[in-house]
Length: 122
Image (cartoon, rainbow, N blue to C red; front, top):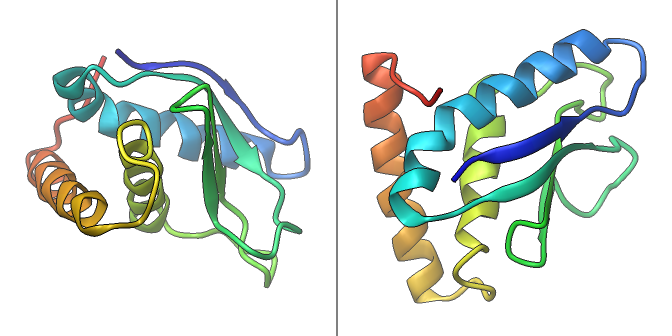
């Protein structure tokens, strides 16, 4: 239960994008393992996509995260991890309802505890 493939946009700064995606996948792996979640493909989302900062297609078949902010810089790591957690909840719950946000709060607390201890996946 992990992220199987990671792909960036192949633009300038690609090494930074790859590092952010790799580190994010590493950070959430224990949470994914505990819930039996997988992500087949983790992709960098185009910064030109204006209406969202992430999405999840078909319960983890493809997750996209926006890494580059509109000003041309990078979103910080904590922001990217929080968006990833949000998208992972969609592996189990589609709509943004009470159950969705309850699970999101739960895994956010778990992730914060892992980050405080410097723990992640393999």
